[in-house]
Image (cartoon, rainbow, N blue to C red):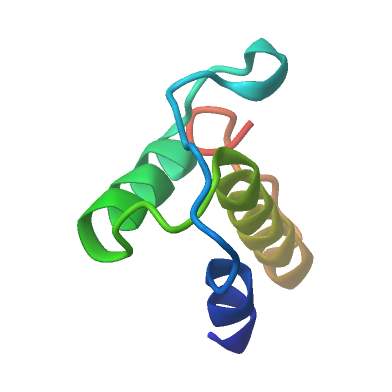
Amino acid sequence: MDALKKVIGGEKQNTGNANPAGQKDDYGDKGAEYVNKKYLNDKMSRDQLEKVTDSAREGFEKMTGKNVPDKFSN
């Protein structure tokens, strides 16, 4: 939770709907965007959200040894 607070602590940046490098939104990205808009008042940039979802995916894969399906995280 402290890592999330540290990421949120920065200045508000334009989140926009543009995906970096033309990536498609997966369920993890959509969920993170929803939480960002609903509860954090758009305090996190798109890049920050991508880092959070990537680290969550990597943590899941490290703990379980299974890959997350592309549908949920690309």
